[in-house]
Length: 64
Image: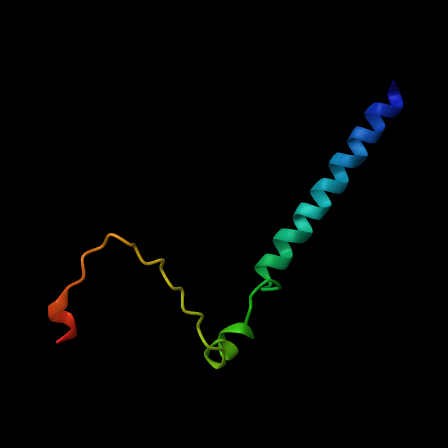
């Protein structure tokens, strides 16, 4: 039974170490994306086509 308490304590310590490492890396800017915004304008935006409704009235003045 004492091995369970020891393994539980070790797992909590490891989890705390990983959490602290994550916080430190976020504060240092490890996950900041500085490359994508500079090349985003080089790619075309994908146009999303909405499905046309069949029973929708057509505005004839628009086509004159």
